Amino acid sequence: MINEYEYAQAGGGLERKERPIDPLSKPMGPGDQESGPKRPETDSPSRDNLMKRMRKVDPKQAEKYRQRTGE
Image 1: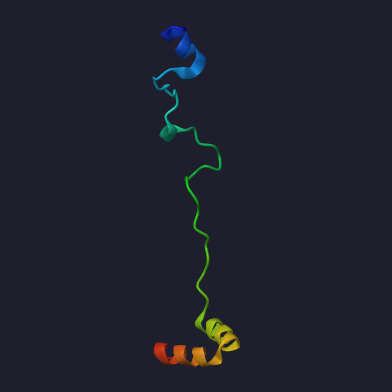
Image 2: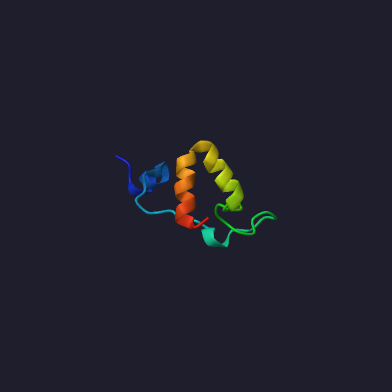
């Protein structure tokens, strides 16, 4: 039979291990100005370009869109 000390040494201890490093105070590298994923910078298409593309795909739908938006 093993005692409590041997059990803890074998990795079967019930106590949690304390971590020495706080995850919020990580050292920041040169590229780590902001954390998390970045939103891609995309411009919305111009209305003329949008209408040309819509006419190519579905002319009737482009006509309905034009009526709704007042173009």
